[in-house]
Image 1 (tube, rainbow, N blue to C red):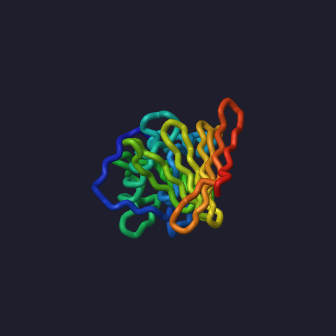
Image 2 (image 1 turned 90 degrees about the vertical axis):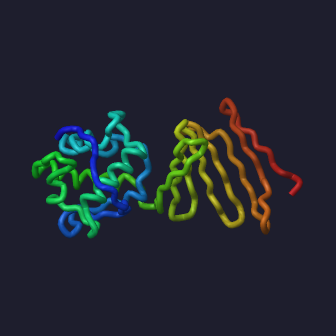
Image 3 (image 1 turned 30 degrees about the vertical axis):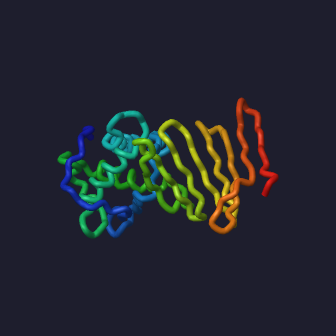
Length: 208
């Protein structure tokens, strides 16, 4: 399989697409896939899937960024057509490249495995612009959210009753945590925790 650029007509993207005849190869729901999927966690040294990875990972950095995932979604939606199902016949000519039977099968398996990387408790993944940079926002089925920033920062928000805990991490290390309590229309800070040089300091609001 040769690495190529995707070319397709404008078409509304379909979040969820079934794969194979009658969906027997699985499905892919692009609305639940977070950017940053790494090559090693997806293909696991499977040579057939590696050839498909090379088609998708256009910049060759061994991780799928949001632009690459959006481009893949547009192409797959176009090939699947209005019925929202992608079978091996429809990928026979994958962006003007003729794929053999093994490669067509590998492509469908690749998409199904890409869907499986996302934990079941994820509700949806969206992007938002912050200072002209794309931030991935993951919403879980229990309502809590995680925001992933390009610089390695992660911000999590968990709501329990009228309390909200906001935790900030940088490259996997917790740097701060703020707990607020909602009383009517106002949010009051209960405590603020900061971590500097590995030392944890918590300030409690005693005026509540």
